[in-house]
Length: 195
Image 1 (cartoon, rainbow, N blue to C red):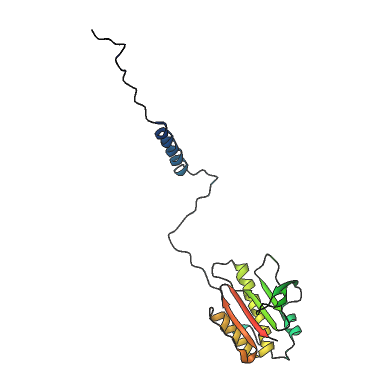
Image 2 (tube, helix red, strand yellow):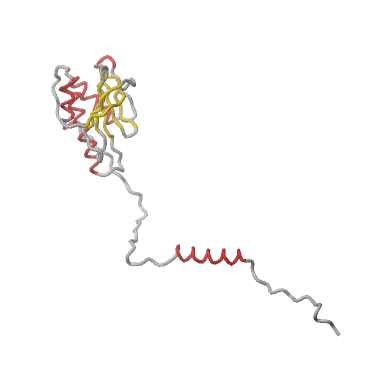
């Protein structure tokens, strides 16, 4: 006879706890990823075509011409706008200056930085993916800069703004005419004039 008191019992085979937890987590994840769409959710239809964005068109040929005037920076400032918020800033050379912001905080930036040596106009250069409001603001700011440069340098100033807008990422500085810097780069246009 065999003694059953000393015979080892066979252990019940159970999967380890972490395997069971992993399988439960995997089931929950699969349910969340592949659940049916409810009527309250919006289904986005994709036609497979890449969205084409329209670039901003600066129709400078139809903006008119501003006759050249006597260089008075107060007159040029008034051409940019009548209402501006004023704050301190640094000019092109890093000197203390005043910044006149002609746009509100929710609009793309359009401002003038003025010091004893420099008169700098800067505005937002809209991207093709921007909405129409931002594109329209960019065009309106460019028109003001175009008129201001027409008053400052005549046709040469207007041509300078046209070149900036139509050939971004290129510098159009004309030190002999008092233009230290003029370019449109990284969604930002600026014209820096020596006083």
